Amino acid sequence: MSTSTVSKQIRTPGATSAANAAPQAATRSPRKAALASWIGSAVEYYDFFIYGTAAALVFGKIFFPSFDPVTATIAAFATFGVGYVTRPIGAVVLGHIGDRYGRKKVLTFTLLLMGVSTFTVGLLPTYGQVGIAAPIMLVILRMLQGVSAAGEQAGANSMTLEHAPPHRRAFFTSFTLSGTQAGLILATLVFLPISALPEDQLLSWGWRIPFFLSAIVVWVGIWVRRTLPETPAFEQEKSQAQGEKEAKLPFMVLLREHKKSLARVIFAAQISVVSTIFSVFTLSYAVNTIHIPRATMLTVLVLANVVALAAIPAFAALSDRIGRKPVFIFGGLACACLIWPYLWSISQANIPLIFVFGLLLSGVVYSAANGVWPSLYGEMFDTRVRLSGMAIGTQIGFALGGFAPSISAAILKPGTDGWIPVAIFVSATAIISAISAATARETYRTPMNELGKQ
Image (cartoon, rainbow, N blue to C red; front, side):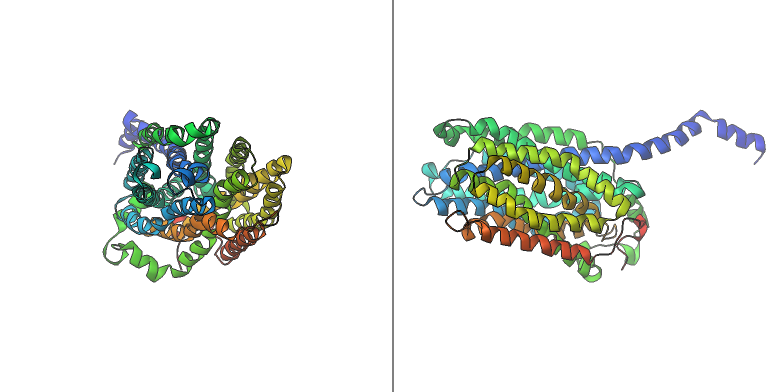
């Protein structure tokens, strides 16, 4: 080929545009994936968390017999936990689909399923209207929410991790968890004016409004995700997947080649106990047992999650510089310590200290673990089984978090020191999480194509 021909090719406008477009697309894709994950997670977990708030404030009074308030509260928390029972099942199914056919298909399905099941909760009759059929229908819809949530975080985390620049994987992947916090903020903000309604209006029609609003937020999430491309790592894996390299059954490959990593994720994911205790159990304990105003505790939840919106990406960026493990371990051990003064301040009805320790616990130190786990867990697996590994490992681990409010309500003792067994329970799970993370391989400098290698 002559020099003039080469020059012409170099000067060809189309070729020049394509060359310029490549780095621009490479820059846009991580940001677009992070934005889509953030919004999708916010939508998904708005739906998931309005259920938790309603379980703490309302469901025990309208979906169960009223002769025993304590039993009704435990039962309402149990319906919250039931959503975590189906999450491992959803993780296996949706993990298989995501690892075989693409992350994007899973993310569209999870939004639709969560939106439909959440909206339908708002249509349910109460126990006083249809008897035992009411809690049965509630449990079925909560189980569907669990299936959806199982695929959402793992799918969004895999999508963002595989789009992210090598040196900023934790930062970009943390936007999934920032979206989760935004969903909790939105859910709590919606419930703030609803909770101010007179009791009879709250229990008759007011509680339904947040569930009906899910139709709007789900539409927003689907609209944002509609043009998101599949990840480069997944496309490369599929193009190279021939013969023995193709994971036709990702679940079996996961069990055969990644048993230790899967076990680490299961135990590390028990850090989620801190989240559900803070957002669900302490809300009920403070309002129904200590008689702190609902608006006060909901405000604590909102402010803690506003702090977390900044803290999560900050801790994730720190882990891109010093490693995943030290940041996660710090978060776990600090949570084990701070749960004590937070529960104590609630038992004393000390409002200023509730705000101080609540913001430190959920807003700051829990964000250290919360912001890092998407990259820490995702980097334990290779592309063939990443979504399955994250989904199955986290959802089995999260199951304890789902039932943590019920467990805590059952072990709560009478009196001002009755919270101590709950603090022991939370501390133990947080320490286990930190120990599990400490046994993992540090991966913050490991190239994408070498992740998950045993």
